[in-house]
Amino acid sequence: MSSIEEPLPTTSPNIITRPLNEKDLTEAKRIFHVAFGTFLGLADQTEFWPDRDYIRTRYFADPSAALGAEVDGELVGSNFAANWGSVGFFGPLTIRPDYWDRGVGKRLLKRTMEIFENWGTEHIGLFTFAQSAKHVGLYQKFGFWPRYLTAVMSAEVRPSAKVQGWTQYSQLSEDDRAECLRAARDLTNAIYDGMDIESEIRAVADQGLGDILLLWDDSRLSGVAVCHCGGNTEAGNDTAYIKFAAVRPGPKVAELFDRLLDACQSFAVSRRLKRIEAGVNLARHEAYQQMLAHGFHTALQGVTMHKPNEPGYSRPGMYVIDDWR
Image (cartoon, rainbow, N blue to C red; front, side, top):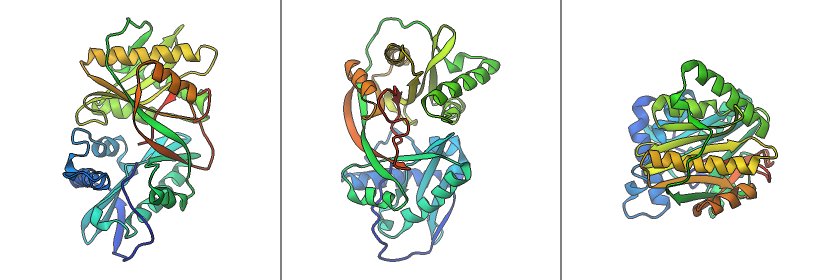
C-alpha cells in the first residue's frame, strides 16, 4: 500500500536511504497519516485512520526490513518489507507530500528490492490504488504488474453458533507453539510452495496485537487466521482485522473455510468487537462468494501487483484471506 505520486523527478534532492530506527517511528507514523490523508483529499490529513498503527507493527515485526528516506537530516519517507518465505510484499510506502515527485519513492523501492533479493523471495506483491495510473506505472518500472482487484471487506460482528474444533495460539504452551508453527508452515506450503507466515504469527503474539485462531480437523491443523484487534494495531477501534487466513486445500476446503469464518466471528464476539475486516483477491472467487454469504460487503478495493506477472496463490480454488496492504 502506498500514497506516493512518482513521475520523473523534477528536482533531485540529496536522498539518503537507510534502515529505519526506533526513534524515527513517531515521525514515520505522522507522515503515514498525512500522506494518505493528502492523497485522499481529507480536510484534516491526520484524520486518516487515526486509530490504526501500520508503522510500529511493521517495524517491530522485523526492524531489519524497515527503511527510511532522509533529506538534510529529516525523515521524508519509509517503507516496510514482509517475509512470508517464498512470498513477500511491501508497504506502507509513504512519502511526505512536499517530497512527492522528487524520486524518493524510487530510491526506497530500489533498496526494498535488494531486501527481497537477499531473502531469495520468489513471488513479490503489493496493494495499491487501482484508479491511480501513476502508482501502477511506477511499480511497473520495478517489474510489478497489476492483476485482479482485491476487495477489502467488512462485516458486523454477530453472535453465532458455537464453533467446535478451534483454539487460540495465546493459550498454547511454548512447546505446543513450536509445533503449531511447524503445522502452519505445512498448511501454507500446501497453498503455495515455500510460503511461511511465521513472521506474522510471531508479530501478533510478541506485540500483543490480537491472536491467531487455529482450526483443527481430526487433530490436524486445517485452518489458521492471524487477527489484529482494536486500536493501535492494524485493525482500529472496535475491529478485528483478519490479516491472513487460509484453510488446507482438499475436498473439505469450503466446509473448513465456513468454520474458520465462524471462528473469527466467535473470537470477535469474545473480544466485544463490533466489526470484522478482511481482504480477499477476487481471483479467489469461491472464497469471495463465501465471504459474501457470511455477511461481508466491500468497503474499498484496490489492485494487487505481482512480480513476476503470475497469479501465485491468487487463483480459483484457493481459500485465502489477505490484502497486502
